[in-house]
Each structure stands twice: as structure tokens, then as C-alpha cells.
Length: 58
Length: 462
Image (cartoon, rainbow over all chains, first blue to last red; front, side):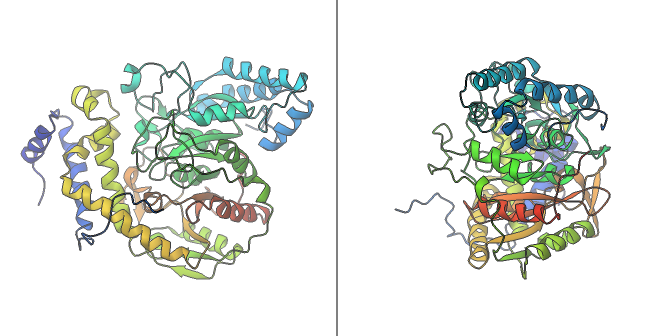
């Protein structure tokens, strides 16, 4: 489903970012690429028990 | 370029001559400065040439030689640093004009300090993609760096100015940074040797960050001997970088002559599928020369690349959030829109990307249980034309700027040490990655030296 300008503006508002009209097409395009890449990480989702924290071993 | 006086052919030759007094550091410096003055207006490798500082440092080296004091192992060797390394008294631009609001650096970056102590002479700062976010060094503020082998082509990025300066003989070696491929991509495009060490090996103290948990520093040089000479000097713990491992240096220069007898394998799947014919042939040549038998498919490579892509955008957006809110117009358009998109990513995706790193680390560790070295192409193609919008990858046209690092990103994501070696098997050179287990830079450098001795890999003069 393609991203809309309204959705991007709402997301940006959560971060207190005001996106200039001239920047909007590029931001939408780049966010769409990011979401496509992120979708790969859920196809399938990796093991939720994988440990992302730094682990110290004596 | 042939009419100009060239630097002696290696850093070690320069240092040896300066140390025994047969040539002065000042003379070597003047040769380097003359080459920069003649060639850099065309290539645009430098954002600032520091002639005065270079002459002062050269004179200090000569004074030590005259006084019988050891001037250091890199005495009189000219080098440069990417413009995200602090140089005392100067604002570190990191390829941006947003950074002009920052105060001048109070101290030199730790690696720069170590090189100066070793007698090396800083000639200036090198051009880069804005905030290191790119693979072409086409910078809206400071211009594009041109490839010395073909000025109509890109030098690669983001450390493009550093790689091109070495390729053009403007300096003997250079320091760059690599977050997703920014040493390996320009090494490939410019046909020079580049080392991205293990994450945590070299302290980043005094450099401008991009993605804290992916940023690496490392050298470029025209030979493995020069690469190792620079690497040996800059190794060592520094408490200013909290990710730097507190381990002793592992000097490698003296071991480069050892014959290569390690077990190597070629990376298949993602790394083969996304390479072009020249890249595949280059990998084949290198694999034959190293006696590589097996092929290994790292099934998680695509997901690792995706995770690195997501984390990079989120982290860069986070780092620059305040400037993105208040002065977005001052960013290079090529980086601005990517950085603005990063903070808009839901946290769920970022958390998943972090998990992916551990999954891929485990998979890579299993590959190294039976092999000392893995081999893969560095870039999906050789140097692209400046302004080229797309590259052909596996039968599809993809946007060039974000995809030139397809083959480097999965490997830096898990912090592996990689030496990129140049192969000249087409109109332009292309790089091959020699990937070693964590902390075993020596293996990749020994393999690179073997390839250089057998004439497979070399930096061709421009």
C-alpha cells in the first residue's frame, strides 16, 4: 500500500519535524524503501528470543 | 600526470630514505604538495590542503634526523584524512555545511595523533559524501570527487576523496571511515587497497560519528606493505571510544612475507547473484590464486543488509534530529531526504533489525569454523559515471546511490575485518573483499600480500 503525504506528516509530527513541501516526495520515496527493507525482517520474523544485548562472558 | 615528479613508490621507501638522511621530509612534502596543486583542481580529492602544517611537520621530522633522534617509522610519509577526522583548530565538516555551527576541534583525532608521532606528514582533509551517507562522493557542498582512472566516473564513497588521493599519488596513504562499505567501495572504484578492521579494533576518538554501532576507521594505500605500515602505527586502545577493545596491538607488517596456506572459500548466493561478470571473474582469479575450493552461501545476507539499511537510516536521523528540525534546507538533498525518513520508522522495525545482527553473527561464525578466509566481490560493478542514476544488478535497474553497498553492508553489520584488493580485469579496476574472522586482520592482509606478490592484485598508476 503506497504511503500518503498525510501519513508521513503524522509520523513526522510525532518527532516534531515539519517537512517542507519540496522535501516531501523524497522523504516519501525513501521511507517507502526503508519499509520495504524492514518488511524483509518479518518474512519470517526472526526468533524473538535472539539476544540483541551485549553479553559479557568471564 | 606523468610529467609531474612522482612520490617514491612506497611509504616504507620514503620513510627509509628520510630516516637515513638521503632525502629530506621537506623535499618529499614539496613533491606531494606540487602534485596536489597540479592534479587536485581536476580531481577534487581535498576539502582543505594544509601546506603550512605539512611543511612544519616535515621540518620537525628533518630536525629530528639532523639531531640523531628517531623520527618514527613513517618519517616524512605524506598522508591525508577524510574530512570527518578532527584536525586541531579546524571545524570538522564531515562533508556538511550544517557542521559550520560547531567549534573548531580542540585536539587531533587519536589516529591522526599516532601517525604524527610516527613521523607521517598530514597534507590535508579529503572529500566525502555528506555525513558519510553515500557511496559516490558527489557532495552538493564540496563538489564531486573524480576517479583518477577516468574523471568522468565516481571515486566511490563515502571516503572517495581519500581513495582517489591515494590512487592519484597525491599522498602515500589515507585514513577513511567505513559504516556500510565506505572504505571498501572507493577502494574498489579507485583500484587501491583498503582495510576495514574488526569493529572495536581502532579507536574512533576525535572523529565525527555516523552510526555509532557500525562505524569503523581504516587506511587506504597503494600496496599491502603500506597498508600494514599505517595500520600497525594506528592500532591500540583508547578510552575515548567506549566501543574500542582494550586489547594489545597485533602488528602485521613483519608477517606479510609468510606464504598463504590458509583455507579459503568463495561466498555464493547473495554475493554471487548481485555481482556483475567482471566482479565474478575477479573473484574467480583471486580464489584460484588463494587455492580456495569451497563455496559458502550465507543465507542471512539479504536480511543482514536490510537490517543494516534500516539501522543506518534510523541512527543517522536520530543523530541529526535537531538539525533536521531546524535547518533541513542546509543538508545535501541526497542525504537530507534519507535522514528525514529515518526517524519516522516505527520502533518495531528497529528492534527487529537489532535481533537480525545476532542471527547473522552466528551464521558467519559457523562459516569461519572451517575457513580462515572468505572471498566476495566488493561492489556490484566497477566505477559508475558521475550522475549515473541506476545500476544494473541481477537483471534489474536499481537506484545507484543506496545500492552500490549491497555487497559490503552485510559484512560490516557484524563487524568483520575485510581487506579490499584491486583487480584490473576490465577497463576500470574492481575490488574483491578478503574477509577474515574477528580480530584476524593479519590473515586478510597476508592473503592480500600473496595476491600482490603473484601479480594478481596491484594499484595501477594513474
